[in-house]
Image (cartoon, rainbow, N blue to C red; front, side, top):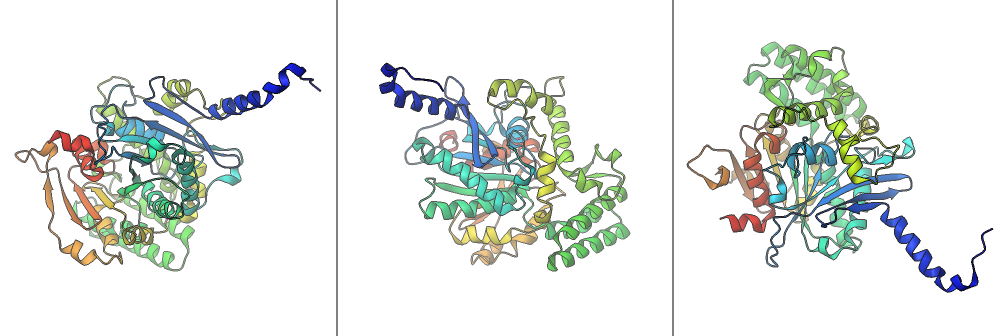
Length: 465
């Protein structure tokens, strides 16, 4: 037993406080200039979620129009927002650590989270701690937001926009509802600016039903192929109505395999292209097994093709090398993305469940809901998104449907090419983005940035006019 000298006893409380502070700070760090902060939140015992916050250098202080914050939620499930969203889509640097001219920091602060636990740098110490439903993921993410926001007044002043892509849209809808409840209960000090659903997997049933007709229209399936696709999609509909979610998920894998083999491997993220990663996919069910891997591979190919550097910008090497070294607080035994496949596996029973009800609840609560869709997306096809929107019970739906669309141009240049359309009524907004596939910020960065400014009412947008 260690004996403490008597003259040190009066200093013991201060020492303990300092030790506690150092232990706490070991879970968080940041840059010297305060432009970046990152850290871990233990959302449950032995379940650790990683976050990374960027303060925009373009920030404009305006009390009447506060500077917004975007919380980016990646898809998969198992896709890393800290990795993919940050370095491939909207962060300040690309995957070759070169400055990105179209970074969303031009319009907002950015908060990337590796959600759910097990994704990216987030990790669990016990495999039984992976979330098995979107609701469980929402609880964890709300816990993280409470830890970040409740003690930081600067964050509280910035309205939060939850922006999602792909399966991340299901997380956004559920966490949006959770945040509204927590704020009303006084448990979370946060101003929710809105929820933004980008090419989001909100209603799997409506998407699979859209695939056959769409691929027939663009000549990637013939009449026989479209009919067989429709037959499998209708089988999924029946399975979902019976609550056979795992069976529906297996049939979904079978349907994707059928489409791949009968379309000569159409790209599910851009139906005008071939899927370069499909050559090795030959067995039924392999599409569902490799969904998270294909998601990663596609972004890697896009990033490499659009990069000015000759480097391929391998994200796995970057995240487990230079970025891990920069962050310093990632445990040595944690490898970026090592548990991502387990995240997907744990959520299989929820994968095909719709989240239309949650979108309805957000609208009824007065939350601004924005939907945007890339014209060339197949996995979350625009016609599928339009179909699930028509299932909303929101009382403004009829007026929304009857409203006129407005054409969109990049940088407000109406003499240029049409880049998209937007329709709004009350707190529901829908953007059609032309020339983009599943990854809108990658395919159409200019119009995506303009859209973000309009959604968030960023002071930077106002000052640019």
